[in-house]
Length: 585
Image (cartoon, rainbow, N blue to C red):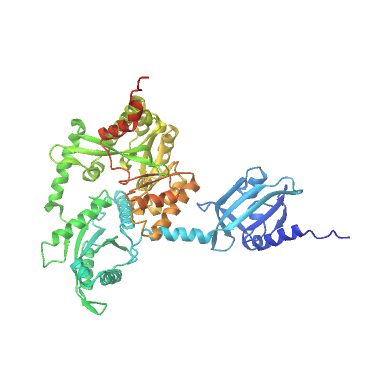
């Protein structure tokens, strides 16, 4: 006689039947005891692909598209006594081009008879696609759909790297002007925007972008840099006349009348052209020269385009003089460090500083890094300059740690450039600085931009691992500006992500940026990394980042970079109650 039905069991089975997550229970030998309908639908061929018996019709891949080895498979790990939760993997069905993102969890079962392990699999493809879309949107202009400044600068950097590599491989006969950068400015746009209103101005920008796209070829990248400024990257040109012909075509297209909101509008374009690749070490320099060429052209009202000519550029003379002065600045003790506080967002208490270099120029006053860092990078002066910055930051922090007990656990963040990582003795120099200053390695953070990782992806891993082994923390600076390098996070031993200020600006008004911030914070959590947000300037920025559980932040809302004496004054004031004499009894 069959046993009476158990209502509790029937309820549980009904729940499992309708559960959207795949649920699989196996015995100690890995044989399936139970699987719900979702498992049958999501995992064709039952549990074989999870690490069970037989050959499954699907396989699991890691985030780099590599198939998991047998000990890495979910079922084998759980049966070996290694539970895990919500690991994100790719599920690839054999003979199908489609892949799904899944979150897999596994726990052992005890005291339930033959049941030995429980595996659950959730399809998270839609969520991953939304996150990818949000990140892509962050690098495109929302009005025109063109790449924005951040993505365009990334493309310029990659183009320079590829072209320079090709030039080194074919030094004989390689064309030195096989690329060009066009900087496009719309004349009288502000007048039209102010007179006819922003809706008409926005419609005009959209139409300009459309016309621009009709003129460029597949080997060209158009972008909107901001306001009424556009740009085009031209690669693999036959001659320099290709860029000039394109400039004339763009001018002619924009010169045609626009019919917007029952208005007939006429507008002109001014275009600066910067040719060549051999003279440029950075995308910023290249864009600057194209911008300069555009302004040179504005002095000639009958000309619509102008090719940059460095021999007639006063700025080049200033740049050369700056280089000469910078070579003497180190020996003359003209460099200064300012310190911007980094705070714990939950308490607004200072937990460290970022060291930022300044130059006390004898005639031009206190210069920010934007006035000389690019020159230092180009000339190689960044190597002695960077060594001085690291040594001075460690020396100053060690002195403050001894003088102010409240700073005992503070950290100091120091930026390092790609040129510094080209030094064969970088690790030894860092060790020497720590030994000479007595500063604790675990209170030092070294910040590295994503661009450094892209340029040195194969050579830098060993150096970073040596630095990490010393106890120094590693930070990805300006995270998000090099979207193509997100996969590098799995390869490098980082401790922290610093979110670029472009994602903080207007986040209190832009819902998409807010979602991107949330995705980045969640990404950091999944990787076990700290998150620092820079550029916090308003109470709304602070409130939203705090709500997103971002751990650390810096920005003008808390403090501008401070001279050493200002830091000391702040710390003395903080300790004042401790320094007051005890009244006599």
